[in-house]
Length: 253
Length: 307
Ligand SMILES: Nc1ncnc2c1ncn2[C@@H]1O[C@H](COP(=O)(O)OP(=O)(O)OP(=O)(O)O)[C@@H](O)[C@H]1O
Ligand SMILES: [Mg+2]
Image (tube, rainbow over all chains, first blue to last red; front, side, top):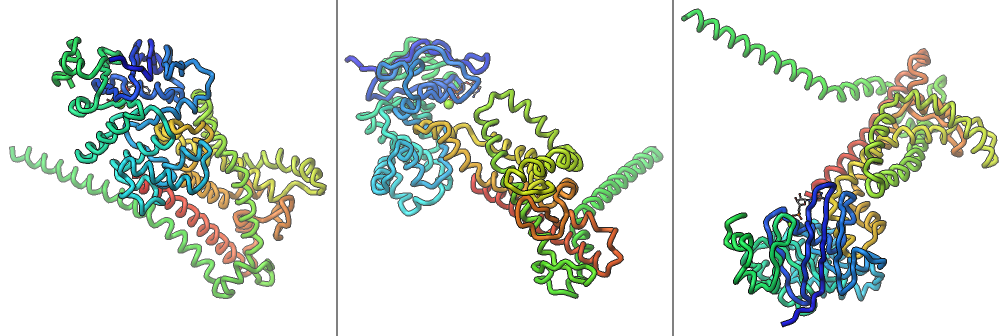
């Protein structure tokens, strides 16, 4: 089977100040699949996700070299407006950060930014995306409340809905279920399985079983390097690197 | 053996006593600090009661007649002067502080903030009389010679505007320091979230950062205002000190603190004058207290909401 790659990373290096964080990353992320990035804490997973979205630009200490191709376009060396590139990706950060406004406006924010202002349209979209993350029934009567009052798990789903609302083709999810109970986690996992029909999903998780349930493709990282990558069946069934093997067997971490 | 035990116990008793004594003195100091504001208020109230009993408070606050010789003490002129210089000072200082804080924390290179921090602290530590002198040397002539004529007015320069400018410059470092702290403490993830939704940098600052910082900004402005309201020397030196309701920015005014500082100890032969000045002090105290309380309340409330 041949995968079409949505994202191709070539020789990506990133350092904060003088400290190298990502070292010569080469990886490919297939379209309309779930790619799981795994690896011990501090190995650079979050940083890699942020560089896909060029959020590393915001950190004046970060130096990035190499290439990241998205749909064949090198987003590190492009003249295209960077906000347009970012809108191709919905980012779900490791911890939820609701915007300092009410629940409704958290979803409408991205839509308004891209020029949609009609109330009827916004109402519909807000409901649609809140339903999509199974949050609508919980919040439909309190849309005008500050989003910060939601529980962490609800905030996480809100942030997912907010990301979906800008109509990305890629979802970057950094430990999206870390604050959720098993049932909500399952709901989210199910959601991802549904979403992958239309989206390319990159997911960071520390939960091995979740990775096994969801992953089509796996990238295993260690100390800022990609140790091994490939189809999930290969990585989980027959890892070639010792490091991967011991990680999967829970020998370190 | 026995003696040793006794010595030990004597030492112990000594220590215990010492500890007790220390604690005692600390408690005394604590109580002193705690009751200080109450003593102050009680003193002012006691002194001003004479006047409050003689004239209804509403008249004292809202009458424009200031004729101490006739026993008529209307504070309205002074209160209005104070309000004018304070609000004007905030109108000047507020936007400057906000834009500077945003620039320093969002746009400037990091070394700029490192250089600016000590400069701001130095500005904050300059004695106010120096600001006053600078006001007389620079601001007053500037208004008298350029700004006034530019608007077709012949003025001395000693004016509400001069007072407000000097005040603004005095509260800028104070407000700026708070604002920088507030903006620095906004988690970068919040901006990342906004930008990943397609917002530009300025949109993010305007719609997310400033919004997040709003309670802090309001209370920083409130604290700045309470400073401006109570500031005495520098204002007194440039504001003209004419007891009239100022009809414009270029007219002199006479804020409450200046009234007290100029007259206390000089005019006390006039009956009730000291009582009137004490009432002025009390008004000042209450207003500053309200501003301070309100500002702190906003901070506490918003912190609770974040937690
Ligand atoms: N803004 C920053 N400035 C300096 N160093 C940073 C910054 N952000 C992350 N790092 C460093 O980069 C390395 C990788 O961090 P990263 O957050 O990508 O790890 P991670 O794999 O996501 O870990 P975890 O599983 O715990 O979330 C860490 O050593 C971290 O200390
Ligand atoms: Mg992480």
